[in-house]
Image (cartoon, rainbow, N blue to C red; front, side, top):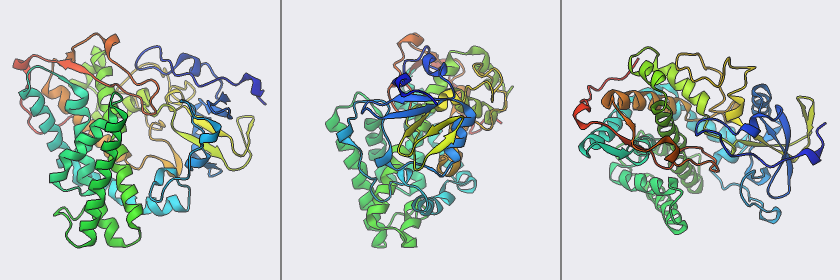
Amino acid sequence: MTDGRAARPLETDRPTPFDPPVELRRRPSLSRLAYPDGHLGWVATGYAVTRAILADPRFSTRRELLHQPVGRERAHERPTPAEPGIFPHTDPPEHTRYRRLLSAHFGPRRVAELTPAIRAYTEQALDAMADGGSSADLVTAFAVPIPALVICELLGVPPEDRHAVQAATAVMNDLDSAPERAVEAVMSITGTVRRLIARLRAGAGPASGDGLLAHAVATGDLTDEELTNLGMVLLATGHLPTSSMLSLGTFLLLTDATERARLRADAVTAERAVEELLRYLSILQFDVRRTALADVEIDGQVIAAGETVVLALPVANRDPARFADPDALDLGRSATGHLAFGHGVHQCLGQHLARAELRIALTALFGRFPDLRLAVPAAEVPTRERSAVYGVDRLPVAWNSSSAGQSDGTENR
């Protein structure tokens, strides 16, 4: 078994904006990790080990049991249990109860119903970009508003409140936001959710009564506190990974003319391209964690009860034992089975929605702006190396205004 003295802190420095940390990739599939609060835990980098841990019910996602691998957490500052409704940090059977309530609203049928709205919000963003001239920050103009408005649509947030929610989520996602502004943004979203729930309880809800929150209120299964926290989680964090994938995926394609040309020429299907981008980038970089509830032997090691494991998804999805030539971006490959959305009972609830948004938005973007390019050198694009959700803070892009085509409302295959 690995000697605790060999434990090292988590490596976060990336060799390029698109590749996992080199030192992290040199680790064995399961190795000791030194946490900032003094905890001695683990990091999993191998595909098979990571997948096995994600599927094992002997590992918990409860917040009070998890240790933070990056930051300044101290032993006396341990997290408290998650409030009711914060379902990502619950285990079965509590997690199962929330998941059962939510799953139909994120399933393929509901996503199909939302597809016209996704297309409409995408075209609105593209129109605004074209009307604004020949340059933009793709993060604020495109990557943030589309998923933010779509999640509002899904939850049933009234149209008159969506602009405020979109503005608040943009503040929360901006790492340069002052702490007081971030707190104000959280309170703004919380207030929006509380007002909506109160209106629904009073029978005066929005016209979009098929929204998730309206259905949740109608069931009578959740308290106002649970509903508020659930809505807050979905509004504040439900779109961030998709926003990050839209901007980072665009950044990657703008640096790879060959793969970009294949996508634009319909030489690869949009579905396969999205799966490969998800595998290759894997933006959930070090916040997918589990803590053992009992001693668990895996990969020749014993993970003791109470020890936290970081599941390094970006490294696991580059495991050559699972994916041939894993460091090559190949939009035509079959990347099914990747772990970008996790695995097991906690697999990302919004994966079908995220796939649809990425497929529609990326193909529409490059169809509308065929000569889209970076407006700054790639080395000057700021990345979030120490953020739980990896991505870029800004993505300055430019195009020739005369070549910006008009949308025909279609998308790639």
